Length: 318
Ligand code: TXA
Ligand code: MG
Image 1 (cartoon, rainbow, N blue to C red):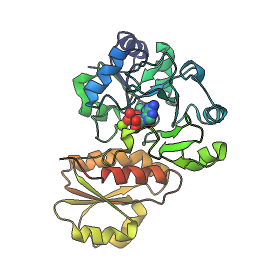
Image 2 (image 1 turned 90 degrees about the horizontal axis):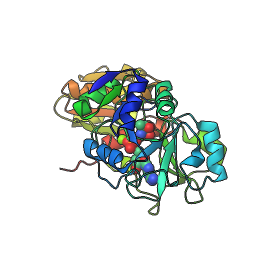
Image 3 (image 1 turned 45 degrees about the vertical axis):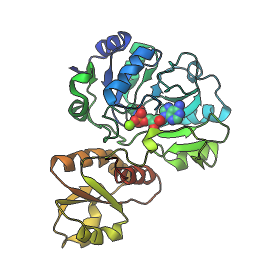
Image 4 (image 1 turned 120 degrees about the vertical axis):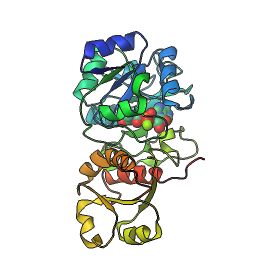
């Protein structure tokens, strides 16, 4: 594994069919050539991810090169949102390898806003298939150190672009079936998307499966209990072991009597999203058994933060 900021070297690794971890404005991605089955297959092997779970294809060029049909709503949405934390699901174009989409006839496309990601995509010249650069089910990485801690020598090159700005994954909108459907809340708030394409439907049984929407995902080792802020004291009293409370800084005032580890997050939703995954990793490092997390209001980025806390708290497979 090499680590650095050499875009040309990283693009060469992609051309050779290898794996490059790279920063985006949301989280770090584990990238490979999206047009090659053998390259995409390496991602599934390294992540321990089921092969039927499709990867997002990151692009810096024309969306029409990667999808068979680009409906008007998709054009308007990406014109407003890209580069940025939005993934659109469209009908798969022939350049996208079937392994990349897990055999699906749709493809998730996104143009990331991080300058290093854009530089890599331009130097490479193709699409880069990339899930978050963590082991399957674990917390997504928001620094190069997180990537190295999770994947180490299984990656050929780690591009170090510092800390991710947004901190939660992209919002995923399915535009392949007519009415826009919200598959995963994320870094682009629902309100901003609805202002462009109208109301987003909730995912139903016919929606394409997204593993980021499994009940347990984005999970640290510690048990996570996600509750409304006014339920935090009772949740602390009911828990046992080494307990931490994860909540906005201003919430801790009245909780002075709770003799537990306090992990304050910024009070604004953007700050909360940016710090969330690093906080969950820190709490694991501190040997915490139970994290009591206060849910934010479900507006703006609060919808994504609440979604990730609930999934971190979801039932674990033994
Ligand atoms: O912000 C992000 O989206 C980050 C960065 C690296 O871009 N990527 C990310 O990838 O979160 P990943 O693989 O951890 O999550 C991608 C989600 C999965 O839940 C996957 O199922 C869904 O996108 N997805 C991708 N292509 C899809 C498709 N064709 N149909 C339905 N869901 C799709
Ligand atoms: Mg992921």
